Image (cartoon, rainbow, N blue to C red):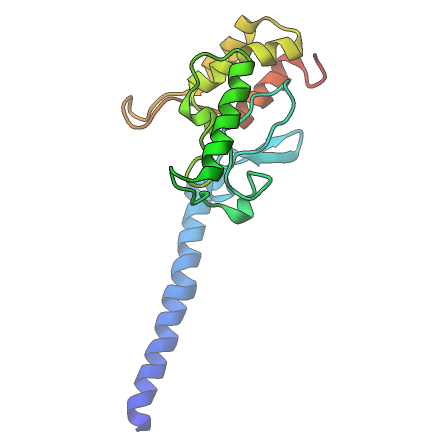
Length: 192
């Protein structure tokens, strides 16, 4: 019996060491050498401090900043420890009420055409991007709060808009954190 168990135990230990230790450590080392920023979480660093990640959205409450799309990740939104969609279906009363309230607020602010990402959460609830149309919807508010012309803010949005990969993969998008940091850098964090 021991003659049958010994090879099985040895193989279990060898493959555990190979696939559980050596392979992950090798891939992590290669990633750190070839893609150091991405391997570290695509962190955004300003003045020596990590202010966020290019991959995870954040909540911005001030009218001086662009706001991301609604987040379904926890009650407070954008909680990376509870990344997930809301699991609310299209017939959900709770989802319908939230979307209806968000649309009403945008209409009160003068919005005629409301992009879908202004009122719907992404699948992960952590999407750091908004559509250029949603950014355009917010330009007047941000410009007024900062005391600058909407055209100057629109220029920042245009510069911060990422085009589809290879010209056709995906949609144009704007990273909200990077755009808000560009606002602070261009107009000052204390302006407005």
